[in-house]
Length: 467
Image (cartoon, rainbow, N blue to C red; front, side, top):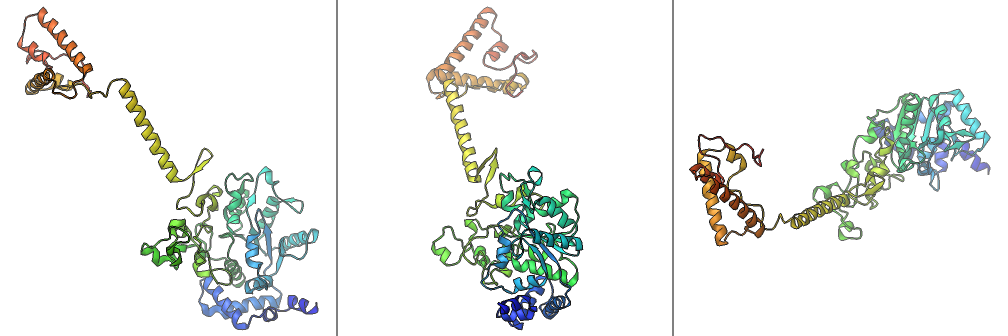
C-alpha cells in the first residue's frame, strides 16, 4: 500500500520508472510533442525540462476538466490503458484539479475544488461533450447547478478553453437530428453568452490524447495557444486532410478501389472511397499521429474514415453525424420535410415523376384525339399568311394543292378521318363563298391558303401561331 502511494505521489521521473518507461522513452515522447507543436524534434529536452521544472517548482498549470452531454469517450481515450501511459502521466503532472471522471473525490468536495480553482484563476478549462441548452439549460444539472451556468462561470474566468472532441466542438452526436436537447458546441455557446475567452477546438470522436497534451504543453511551455485555423482547430492538426497522408492514397490515384467488404480488393488494401471513406473531406492528421500509442488508426485497421474530424463550431445543425451518415455509403442522406433519403433515391423518384407525367400527358392526348395522325397540315404559317411575300404565298398555294391531291389519293399517312372532316368543312365553306360572289384570282389564292392579292390588305382578324 505504501509502495502504491509513493508511486502516486513521487516525481514524474519516479512515476515513469515505476510504470516501466525509461528517460529515453520520455524524451522520445517529448520529441513527438515538439513536432506536433511545430518545433524541431531537437527541442525534446526543452519540452521535458519545462514539464519537470514545473512539477519540481510546484507551479503546475491548473486544469479543470468538465463534462457536458457526452459518453466520456475522450476521457476513456486518454485513460483506458492497463497501466497509465506517458500522456496520462504528463496530464497528472499539470495539476488536474477537477475531473468528474478521473477525480478520486466526489460530491461536495470535488465541486468545492472546482470553485476554489475558479476563484484562484490562472487555469485552463477542458470541456468534453456538447452543451445542451433546451429548457433554459435544465436538461443537464451537475452538483445542483445548471450545466450551462457552470460552464459559463468556469469559461469566463479561465485563461483558455479547450473544447475536446467533436461533441464539444459543434454538438456532434448530441446535436444530430432531431436535437431535442438543443445541443451545441462550446464556442457557439460562449459566443451567445458574450464570453470572449479563447477557445481551441480539438476534433474527432474521440479526440486524440496526443493532440490534447500537445496543446496543454505548448501553453505551459510558452504561455501561448497554438496557431488556429478558421474553425479554431490548431493548424498543425486541421490544415491537412486524412486523404493527404493516407497510406492507401496510391491505390486511389491508380483507380484501385474496394467496392465490397470481404473481397479480394480489400485483402490487397485498396482504397475505401466507394465504401463511404470521408478522408478527402476530413481535415485531421490521424494518419500521422495515429492512435493507441501510435499503433494504428481507423483506415489502417480496415475501416473507412467516417469524417468525425469535421467540425462546424458555429453551425451545430451541420454536425459531422448528420453530414456524414450513413457511414458506409458514398453520399450522405438528404433531408426534406422530416424525411431522409439518398440522392440516388431522389433521382429515381424525380425520374419516375417525369415518366408518369409523360404517360398521363400521352393518355390525355390520345383521349382528346390529338395524337391520331398528328397535327393538321398547314401549307403556310399564319404569320406568313399575313406578312409573307408574294412568292411565299404562291409556294403555300402549291403546297395546299399538292396536299389535296395526296388527300384524295389516300397517300398522306397523317390524313385521318378527323382532319379529313375538318378540311372538308373548310372546303365546303369556301365553296359556298365562291358561289355567292364572282371568282377572282385573289380569291383563288386565298382559298388555297394564301393572303389576298397584291394591292389588297391581308386579313388581320386571324392571329398566327407564332404571335
